[in-house]
Image (cartoon, rainbow, N blue to C red):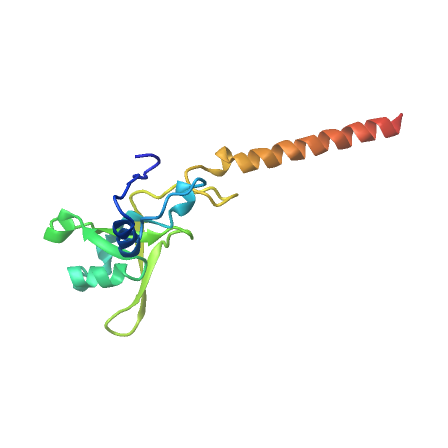
Length: 166
C-alpha cells in the first residue's frame, strides 16, 4: 500500500474491466498517478447534537438528514442503541472539493426551515493557497516558490534604486 493505494494485477482484461466498471474508487494505473488529486470524497464522522429533537434521532431520520451533506455509511454503537444523550455520531462519505458544511438545513414537520449544527471529529488538512490536501498554507511549496520569487524581485528593485542614486 503506497499513499493509501493498493496495486492490483488482474489475470485477464475481462476481470479488470468488470472491476473498473463496478467500483467507484478503482482506476487504471498510469505513470503520472497523483493519489492526492484522485481523492474527491472521504468518510468523516460527524456529530449531530440532541437539541435537534428526539423525533429526528431514529435511523431513518438521521439517514435522511445526513443525506443532504453526503452518503451515510453507519452510526456508532451508542447512537444505534441510544445510550449517549449528548449527540448522535454518523459516518458520512463526503465530497471534499469544498469546505465541509457546518450545519444541515432541512424542513421540519411544520414546513419550517431548520439549521442543525454539526461537528467533525477530524477534517482533512487543506491548503488555502493551492487548495491541495495534506499540507497547510505555511507548508505549501507553491507559496514558498512565490515568496522566493517575490524576494528576488524586491532585491533586484533595491539594487536598481541604489545604482540609480549613484
